[in-house]
Length: 363
Ligand code: PMP
Image (cartoon, rainbow, N blue to C red; front, side, top):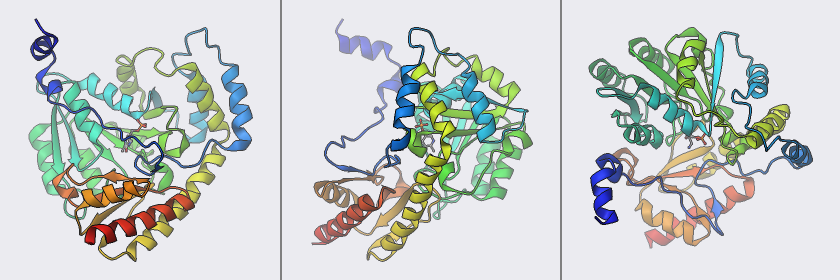
């Protein structure tokens, strides 16, 4: 039997039908495609980071509960005693843990669309039904359609990214409360972009017994570490912990996270600079003819161009700037590009590349 035949016979058909998560090659380009913080680990802290990594007990398995991080985060986020935590190798792994805990025949995972693609991908990986309810044309939640879908499908899990990726906006609070009230299972408020908004849903983790709040250090400047967090009632965390692989947070990550938490104000300073850059960039983009700019509470800006977006994307790449092409990913994202907010120099270069690309495509 050939390898191809074995694959056809044994790899689950829904996995065979998937395309792997695509990561663009950014070699030699200004990288504004993945919502990374453009600033390096603060230079003044690098020696301390080096010492903390050197001192890691690398011959031993790491602390399975990451107890020191637990205590540090409790203080950093002023968590009430009733809120417990679970950590993942990025919040991607937490999405997978949540999905694995509920998956089974007839179980549904629901989100809105367009939103973070991993909700749907992971639902598919683990063999759950996935329902994506379209957002309206302003990228707000269509309350009626979403509540109807929750009633009909009785989802085990609902994922809401707040603010949303790739649209950048916050959803209306009242609609979210209705979703929580009607959901029979668990609602995950994904605050991946919390550093770039004043909105804060952490209190919902104690206010509602079917809400958990997810965060990540990726967008704050530590994407390379892969460290995500889930906050919720102890009863939920206890169940989720059963499907988490032991030692999923390695000891180097644990030590680096502790260094970062000790110096969190340095990262807050970087994210504040990015918020200023977001305002500057939004205002500049508004002046560009043929570009519609969507409001953003995250470290990226969604724009729609009145020309073939794929050509604009390619022309920008030719000029040394990598952004994210969204056109083609979802019908509501026709003509859309997602621009990560970078340093001032990067943003200037991106803006110049965009203007030139538009001119070139317009011909
Ligand atoms: N949630 C949302 C809304 C995101 O946009 C992302 C990253 N693009 C993630 C979760 C995953 O983040 P990470 O795995 O790096 O923590």
